[in-house]
Image 1: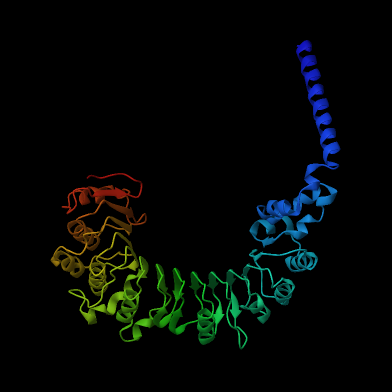
Image 2: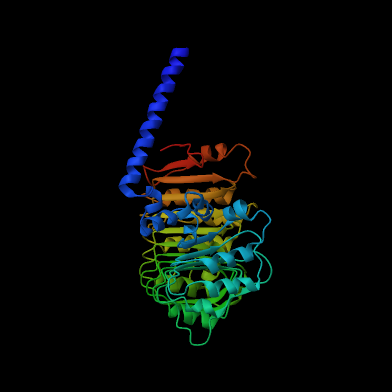
Length: 442
């Protein structure tokens, strides 16, 4: 035992001696240790991959690294920064001090800490940011009134990503937009609709646009030649896509039912969507289709979405006859549909809906449909008849996934799945699968 310990000790001493010798050789070759002599570009790359809390910790590596974190090209004040560093200290003077001493180019500035309220210091930060280098700006104000942004933000012509939460965005007169902006994300942002739409039209490189609970638009008129993704949650009276040739993914959620007061809202909306030559993905609330009944639904509709491949109808009430009939008609008018997702909220048994679905002949337009997902499924008669209709119509169907409503079904949906198994299927390859991936049959 003692001999073994002694041998280990001697071996460890040799390793230490060897390490020291190698270290001395490195110092002789390089003059200083490697970490202190790294090129600035490598140091910037290292810092660029670290969160701010870890970047600050690099100050203990050596004397030369004490202030290198002040040259970090990305400053992200997020939840983790709040947990690790603030600990009761005020955020505002800390950010101000860091920005005042920052050196070199700054590419990204993010403030997304909990409980940040509107305050004058926020605009002081904006004035300290370098408008010649900044590419990514995120400001998330959590409390108080919407923060009124300094117009100085509009001088940042290198911005590629702009995210604002709980702010007021009012560009100054003569503002020509951001020429390099690619991603715009506004949530609960107060806007001047006319000014905002001019700003969008003057920012020709926007590819992603999210407007969540912002100001109501009388007409949401978009001119975005490179726009690929649009998500809108709020309210507009009408929409117009003037120049959106590559818009592929559209997600619309309406925060109020008042839009139904506008005559022909649903028809005009679908008509505008049908004019998008690249549209493949659409998410839409089912009740936004209700007044299609005035234009031929459920038997026919004079417009079609020929390019659409994936459709998600949300907030669908299969206890409402008009909504159900319009939704069925809309689905039929998507001849190249491959994926269908329905998020339903159905709790009452309405015989007229089930009778309507039973009366529908199988559709010859669902030949491309391969996957169906039914979420919050309760198993009431109208839902079962809806599924029966799809199974009988979709000749290429490969998979139907049922996600039971946990609060309404006691057996995990097993009895529902067993009944669905008995329904005839137009596709010999169709499988019915529960949300826990249990296959019910081919």
